[in-house]
Length: 178
Image 1 (cartoon, rainbow, N blue to C red):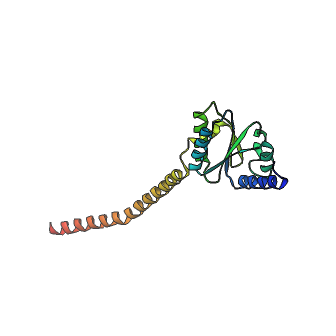
Image 2: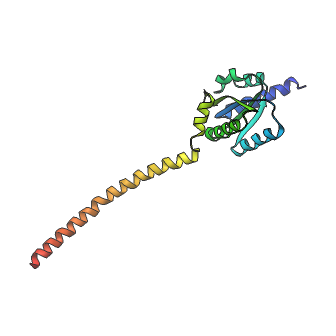
Image 3: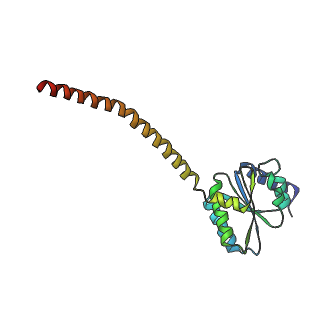
């Protein structure tokens, strides 16, 4: 049995994890086998997420004062939490895919992204988004595309002026020869 000091350390560690996280997914499970648990842990490790099974009373106390406080009511029954400090999209993709592939074992309770509690449909909508790096590259492409158009337009003015001056020079030179 854990001592009061050990429980306090566990609470502090979980509180710190919630404070650092930007997204969390709460899941329930039933008849979980070791292989399924390890499979989920591997998939979440690949996306840089942390996964743990928590006591509900401990989790309710840990979320107090954090952006995940709105999810307090979902800490009922057997609860597993996956948190991410980097990208909510990849965490959403990993969790929604695993819950869909294993409906007999896992049930989705709630997702929390940037302080908003979300249902499964909202998490699946987030999961359908491209990863953060791809979105940034698309934005950079759009910015660069506009800059290229601006440079093309600005360089066209002196080029067109030079062409007009050349044509006028050819007309005057051609007119003197006639």
